[in-house]
Amino acid sequence: MNLTVRQLRAFVLVVQKGSFTGAGRAMHLTQSAVSILVRDLEEALGSRLIDRTTRSIAVTAVGQEFFASAQRILADIEHAVGNVDKLIAKQRGRVVVAAPLILSSTFLPPVLAAFGRLHPGVDVLVLDSLTDQVLPNVRSGVADLGIGTFRKTEADLSSALLFKEPLVAVYPKRHAFSRAARLAWKDLHGCSILTLRSGSVFRELTQAGLASAGLPLEPAFEATYSGTLIGWVKAGLGVAIVPAHATALADERSVGWKRLEKPAIEREVLMVHRAGVSLSPAAQAVAEHLLTNSTRGALDSGK
Image (cartoon, rainbow, N blue to C red):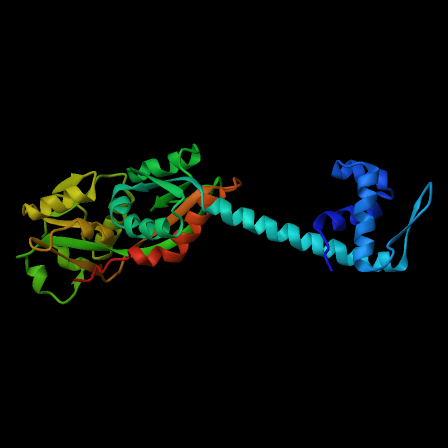
């Protein structure tokens, strides 16, 4: 038995429109062409589906039963074709991801390298910037996705948690902290603290950690970038408080680091995009990959 999609569609449309003429208009075919398609279908099935008169049509009992099956077959085909179209779309496109400098240089590279092997036709552009520039880039549409730690997300943004990571203390290799099994916030008493400038969410987390130990935040030096703080540690200027991923930039020969405990203060790394705006298939593929593989970029912060 050799049935075609065009034959099934012609039959279904004839029944729905109530005429060969109406079906022909829907298919952009002549009435006679539609009639031939239905006739060929009937011959393939070995049964009449439609009784024809000069003025009207009547669906036979066999035709009525076959009509429901034909509709399901066409719906299944359309669904399958739609899935293929979506799959193809996810293999092509351009996606812009906005992320702070630390995450751009530590977390994203291995995750996006794995994505590139799976989707070589999708170009992913990383827009590395300061944390406070990520959300404006997403809101303006400059970036499809944004990654970072934010004080709060607004109603115009949808967010999803990628991972959590602790704050760590980075210290010179010869510091007494190197010999400690664990490190608590209270152990920072008397240290020259290096921290990010006011306005940074990490500055606020650092202040909360010190306050929990009854210590004030009186930084010896402040910087805009975590990498700068680690450079100052190497120069012997003090102990830096940074998120764990920043330690990927540290030289283990000259500095060490440990997570700060009692209490353990973690930052949440979120992925955001504009609420109410559908992501492109390529951007959706990147988002799904980040959610599924976010632990691939995790670092050991408990030296």
